[in-house]
Amino acid sequence: MEKKDGEAMEARLAEMGKRIDELKSRQGTVTGEVKAELERRIDAACADQEAQRQRLHQLKDRGLEHWDTRKDQAGKAWNDLEKSLRDLAARLKK
Image 1 (cartoon, rainbow, N blue to C red):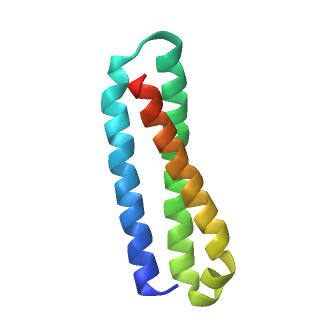
Image 2 (cartoon, helix red, strand yellow):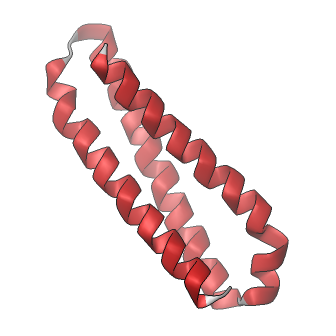
Image 3 (cartoon, rainbow, N blue to C red):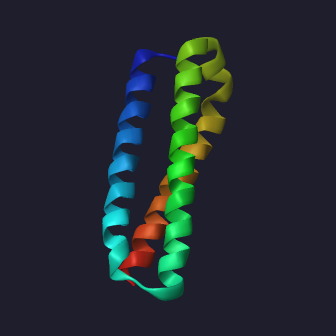
């Protein structure tokens, strides 16, 4: 893995953490089933974020040759997590 790729992924993780924290702070504005669903989805987003953090550290440890073979897979996982966070934010706005 190239240094710039690792730095970019670290920045994405940090941004996702901020977005999750923002969603958590806004969670108190909803009640009932919506709140329960959001809690489940926020928990899932946190778990996904941690999984991405672990993958990043594994890739850093293994080096560039593993990064090249897993780059597409990692990109899809990042995109799925970001979509989940956008969906959660939209749900809170309703």
